[in-house]
Length: 223
Image 1: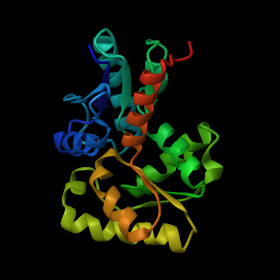
Image 2: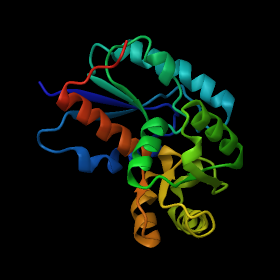
Image 3: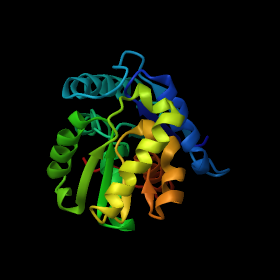
């Protein structure tokens, strides 16, 4: 039986899960592990505040407790990595956070990281998390598009705004790699990369790719 990677969307927005699932299609090769995306229906509609993060963290841990017998690796698909630390204490299986893996991938592909966030209120939280990982020095700027998670589905509106923020990160802050600061931005990765001429990292893609590698090489999480 093929290995199974469980990708957890900790918000209850199924449109985000659907967009994320589509973005992971290139990783579904014939010999790859099964990649299954799930939505936590009890989660907030969007993870936009610290209260949302704290609430989602507990729900992620409960999901791991339920599914660790049926999954071989886990990904939490939210740029705040809710529940990541706690989940690693209850499972020996590889567990990847989108933000943590996205930052690490961005360092390898550029090193001068520009982050695109959803709302201004998220920016301070993102900086605090990057500092806790000792990676904040690699971020040149974190700019919001001033849209909530639900509004990210409106491609006609979002595309122009996200491109404007991406150009600011490139031209004003000399970012040489762009990191999407929300799993709901997955559908905009390619248009940003094409228009900006820079590598653009979808953190959930990065985390799932890391999970695939971990399973293929037999890595286990540290205990």
